[in-house]
Structures are given as C-alpha cells and as structure tokens.
Image 1 (cartoon, one colour):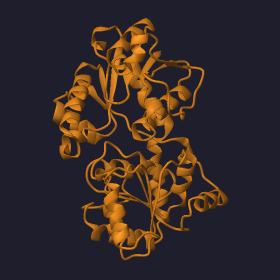
Image 2 (cartoon, helix red, strand yellow):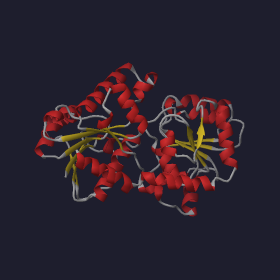
Image 3 (cartoon, one colour):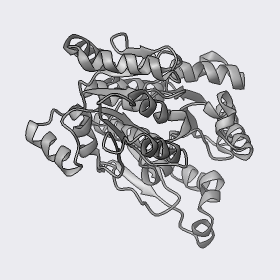
Image 4 (cartoon, helix red, strand yellow):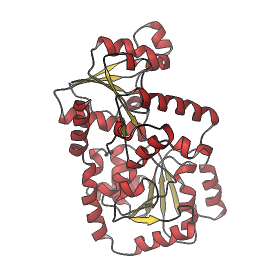
Length: 368
C-alpha cells in the first residue's frame, strides 16, 4: 500500500502527539516494510527523533505561496500532492484531515486522541474550543474510519459528535523501545548524578499544567521526606507550585527537570521507586505505559481512561484532588514490597507491544 500521514507532529512536537505519530510510523515501517510511507510536513523539521527507513519519504510545500502559507498547504493545498501520489490511504494522526479529501479517490482515516476541550471546557479558550470542535467533528464525519486511542475516547466521540459506533475502531498506543530496554545500575547512577537526584524518589512525567495536577502531588508530599521529581515543560500553572515549595521550604525535596533525551527519561523511569500520574483526564496516558514497561509501580486516577492503561494491578486514587488520600496511597506503595504487582503489570502491558499495534493498524488499513 501507499500510505500518507499528516506528519506535522512528527517533526514539531516532542511530547504526546509527536510520540504517538513517530511510534506509529516507526512500527508500521518496521513490521510492514513493503508499504510506502509518505510523511506530509508543512515546515522544516525542528525535532529529529524519527527512525528513518528506506520506505519513508518526507514531502513539504514546494511552491512559493505554499511555503509562505504552510498551514493553508496542510489544510487544503496538500490534496494536490495526495492525488498525484495516488495514495491508497491518508491517515490524519492528530484529529485533522485535509479539506476535500472526501471528494478524492483516497481512503481516509483519522485518529482522535481525546475530546478534553469539550469535557473540560474551562481548561481551554473559547476560540480554541470552537476551532478544535469544527476540525475534529468534520474529520470524523468525512473520514472512512476513525481510530480512537481508548474506549473512553470512543465513548466521547459517540457522545459529543453523534458518530455511529461501527465507524470507530479502538487501537491503543504503545511506547518507544527505549522504555522497554533494561538499563544497568551504572547507567542509572550516571543519570541520577547528572541531575543531582536522590537514590529513591517519586516520579511524575508530563507538561506541568492544571489538567496534569502536579500541584496536588507536591501538597500531598508536604510533611514527608519523600523526594519528588517532576519532568515536563512548565506552564504558568507551575508558578503556583514553585510558590508553594518556597513557602513550605521544600526546595530540596522537589526537583524540576525538562529537556531530557528519550534514553535519559527511560532510565529515570527505572530509577524511580514510584510513578504517579494523577491527571484529571486524558485520551490515554502514554507515561503510564512507559512506567509499566519500566517495571515501576503506578499510582493513577481510578476514573476515565486510566484503568485501561494502568491495568488491574496498579494503585488507584478515588479523588485525584484529595491530597490526604494521595499521601496515604504514596506512603503505602513507597513502604511495601510491590514486586508481585510490578510483574503482573508488566505482563498486562504486553498488549501495548509494537507487534500487537502494528497488526491491528495494518488490518484496519486493509479493511478500509
């Protein structure tokens, strides 16, 4: 097959949507090398994390006007290249499809990650909500098939957009091979020393924003001696955390990190004693999968998508905003032998392996 991808996030997003896009293209290329994969990128790449192979080709705007208006090329102008390449499938990896694709001979698939902007509208501006709703709903309506990255997202697509259930397939996400590699003690020690981290700590990974709820972790650990490492890009929300840390003299207890490469991040997961992910809502939650493959016990939200990702052997919070409950759960996991739960969770995570996901995707492509 000749398969095209909206690859903007591949080359311009270092976190969730970018990781999803890079991993999907990587595993499809590896397990189905006879296909040709065309990556449509509107602007010169700024992130170089894709593992290239001979069956991939990047396409960018070529005309003067398309280069000047790359967003317009991605939204509409790209259709000329899609048609000229005689693609079998075009897959929008982040909720969007080019205008007019429904009038072409090319079959289209769109991945919807989440509809958080509709479920928690107060976290988004009015303009952003309107733009996302229009783009995502239009893509769902005109596509030949929709991929939801979780059962929770599938339910939301049906609820908010009124899409027929039969049009939606759930295909889970995986994570990069670097998180499935077992690192040596000296490698772990090297990263720990580089970032001046304690021997044992609780880890949280994700953009430091209101929805991810890192502030509650910090409040929960106040009065304990348990160190916390927060890995992720800071937003204005992080200032609340910084002020709380300063007012409560927790500077030596809480460590902020960002800009790690993938291998360092993977090593950090394995160095952690506990991984906590108390996000209010997600489409899936790749960091949970990364922790399970790293054999690090997980504490997360009991509601929404999180049990899908974390499985039956993780520890759950009934109320992620309750710092007292969170403190109790952290202290419990921190203090007892979790080896049995860790191994069972690792076995659970195998459903998110590359080969499982590749087979499901390729079967879906062939059906479409």
